[in-house]
Image 1 (tube, one colour):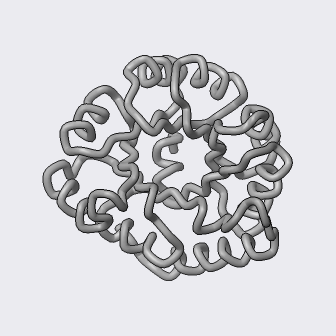
Image 2 (cartoon, rainbow, N blue to C red):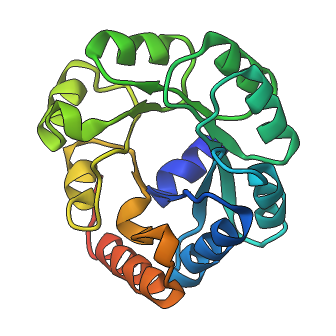
Image 3 (cartoon, helix red, strand yellow):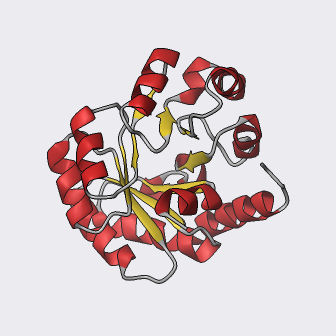
Length: 209
């Protein structure tokens, strides 16, 4: 099974967002403790690449880099061991570089034109972000009716309460971050683990095609 299929099998991308390495590591550990195995480290804090390296040492984790804005960040992420990279936008250079390294890339897009362009440029999935701004699950249903072949990841408005609805609407992956972490400035490890447990329990209770 290739990496793309591994990602699709997991369905839930737990996104680590923090302002410092120490908090980010605690968040990642809470995600893993709660039972999630697909981790995206947002490259928005100093030491993000160090966290990717650290998590790659753990067994049974798929670790990616998020908020990859340019080719330099893509090179750093992949050299740090990222299994996949995610961007909030579509950059042909990033997609071409990731493909040359055999790494799945997930570009960001919003409109139908942007989504199909990102797919045709070689995105393995297309991140529809921020999905809340365009109608949430109803928008994903419309997009999948027109582009049933496009593998969609949704973020920016996906929560513990509605993530199953996005999967049912046709998303292949959903990204969860704030809804799991809460206020990172008042980080509570046990609360994060409980939220992750809730997600794992919900996803195990549904047979989503």
